Length: 79
Image 1 (cartoon, rainbow, N blue to C red):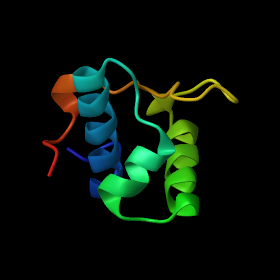
Image 2 (cartoon, rainbow, N blue to C red):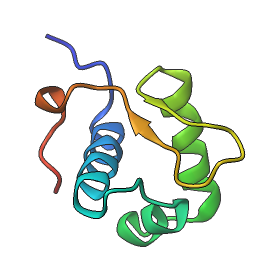
Image 3 (cartoon, rainbow, N blue to C red):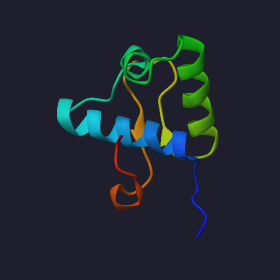
């Protein structure tokens, strides 16, 4: 079975889901930058790609509005 997302996309999804569960709110893009040690444009592009692929939903202009649409049992373990 082919995954609906790449390994890296899966890690972003797992991080967003885990962060949201632990903190009761989604991560900011800065949190993703810190965790993955990437630039702001890299995080923003990943968020755009995940949105375009229907893997997350977000409200434009609303901070911390990312919602993972992949069922938890289909997410990979966070590494």
